[in-house]
Length: 125
Image (cartoon, rainbow, N blue to C red; front, top):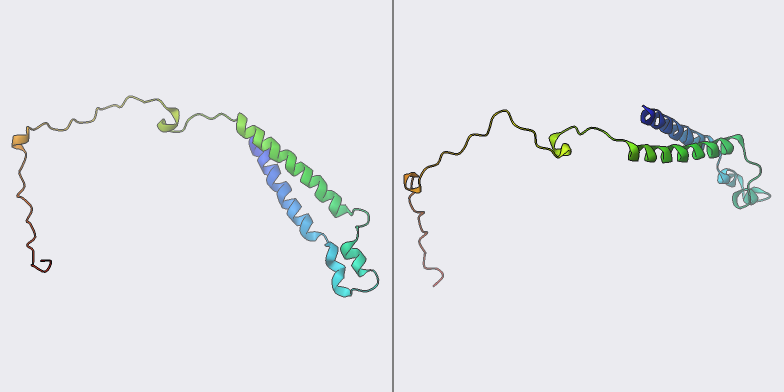
């Protein structure tokens, strides 16, 4: 139950991170308007104060890492009952034994005729 809740939360956080990253304006967004005055400063310089989108992305990224670690921990602690005989390692008794192969002496087995030998055409002499 807890594993499912954390997994759903993890997927929702991942979707929100994708949405926030797509909504943000990149550093080089002003570079196309011209390379004079202050445009090159915005492309190569430090960015000003963090916007709401960048702070929200940082918080969601932190939550994403926390849920990732939680899922990893829950996966190691999860024990499930084996779903097949191969996973259980034990052999269950069968209700009916397998039929035994009929035993016949070798003299009573049908004999096949010998295989024909291909004739040589004399080309390799």
